[in-house]
Image (cartoon, rainbow, N blue to C red; front, side):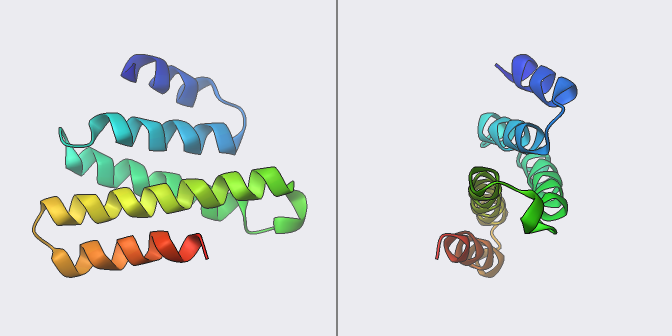
Amino acid sequence: MLDSLQGVFNTATHDTTRAEALVAITEQWSGHNMDTVQLLCRRALGIAAGATKNKEGLSAIEFRTFERIRATAYNNLGAFHYTKGNTDSALYFIRKALGVHK
């Protein structure tokens, strides 16, 4: 599964596909290598932030996809901090994930 997700990321031409692949990879790594989860979530957030700077260039579906990616990445960052015993940081990122859905 990880190999195919990494292949999708490496060959994708659209930012939505690349960011979705990164978040999917974090779901696979969750519980195994949380430091990698953190790095990949931050990378997915960077892609989403860059792509949504100019909302006018995105379709409504693309924008919602990036919002879902952001929410999932923030949630996974919350899980990362929780496993590290950083409860305050975990709650911060969980709240950011919830805020995306408002």
